[in-house]
Length: 272
Image: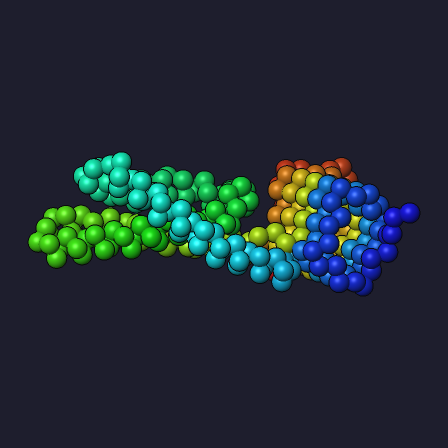
């Protein structure tokens, strides 16, 4: 028989993915780093729980951020060497000079789209991939600066000025990617209720932070005095109504189901 009593426990990084835990009691537990993706949690009790990123997850994110560029560094040396062999000096200079311009233009045209879909974009590419992109742009910026100053030293002012201009453009893109990397670490979902069935679940007095409720079912859940801290995701949540007080009191909406955007308005009042 499945154990349904998990109250007042430290359950960091535990996986309950896909399990049927209807009626389970997690009251007072620390659920940071837990994975409830696709779990059935009908009527489960989550009073006074704490969700979000665990220390282990934070350490892994930082390790990924550091390790990815290190791994990339070795492969980039081989890549640059192959380019220098295959391309002429003029073609190589044009290729290097065009990269930051193309990246800058792409950033301008895609910035709003990336910002709007930031969570999905981050999850798709992964923090490690963003770290690699940052490393590439950082090395490119340093390389362009070196070539630019070398051009001035060789008496080629026009070439030096061109590469320094490319350095500035590349530095702007690199800085924005760095901000993207830091933000992706801060917004990473530590606890996942993605696609979970939380019908009639009780989240009274819970502290929700860096938690993914995307595609979850929240119909009939009690959210009495729960606190939603930054970076929690409620993308495409299925919820007909909520209870704002225990014992199924203060139903919102009083009758029928939420209209478009009404759920977001109700949840907003709990965000701090």
